[in-house]
Image 1: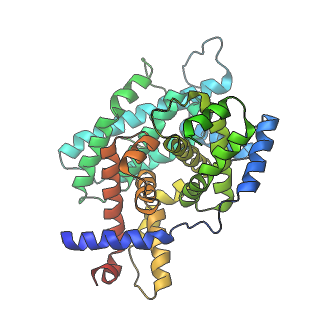
Image 2: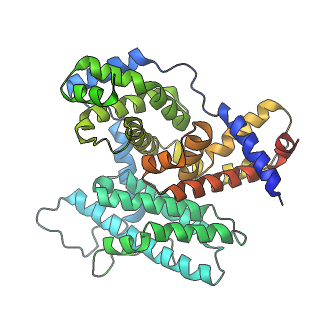
Length: 203
Length: 180
């Protein structure tokens, strides 16, 4: 095991060595970027980082395919103003939130009992869906986006736990969850009533 | 010129003040964007987006913090959301196999260390990597990071500690470099 003194030396070494990480190859191209900023402001058009919208819609469609099994067979009754696509995402998000709530509740309970081995794999499954939803219209609602981002952080941490020997990290994860009120926010985001079709993942 | 005066002039529609504000902050914004994105085109996109948003929202800046802190908050939001959309950053951070890949192997030469270090930093979870880059590479304080990322100072410290621990583990076979 590394001694404290070695850790200090490592941190010092790391700070120096890491200076080579992602070093800009040139000074900021001020004039080029300024011209672009002015042009876009003049046009009133906002640059979108992902220019090809098919990427976004492709991901969104994949999200629906992943978690939306059963669409068309579900029993959700749309409100009059709800569009078809909005309903699809609402349905998918509700399923996802329910699965994630079950997963995190189980995680906390099993953590206390010292059983965490199965969780990283399940977290990775849910993480993939989280990211697809973040890139879908489901995340257009700022509250939903914020919740998804919190869940993403928690799931990333769980997915990177090492089976059987990561108790300290597990405790930090639950502390993060508590600080962010993840489970209460998650539970309040799940609509009352029966959850639609349950699909893959959590048992 | 005093920063408050500059902001007031920008709010009044003074184009030269906008440019002065841009010149005062663009280098650090671009550098932070590049450090997080690792790509020049993306860093330029994110920098431009940061200033477009900043000029749009300057009326909402209340002066509770330094303008640079407020700009870095916008920068990190733009960069992290942008990286999520292009899927470069997150695919790497969640890839445990890739993370395992940087823990093995044997050191052969200095260039390999740089490659391994880069891969290890890339493989950190988003929160860890962002805090590590901002604190250990770009020299932000935990207070500044907390404001920029919307987290408690203690969270920033904890994430930095965890980032370093993961890097120590990933780079264990280079121990001679720092113990020497």
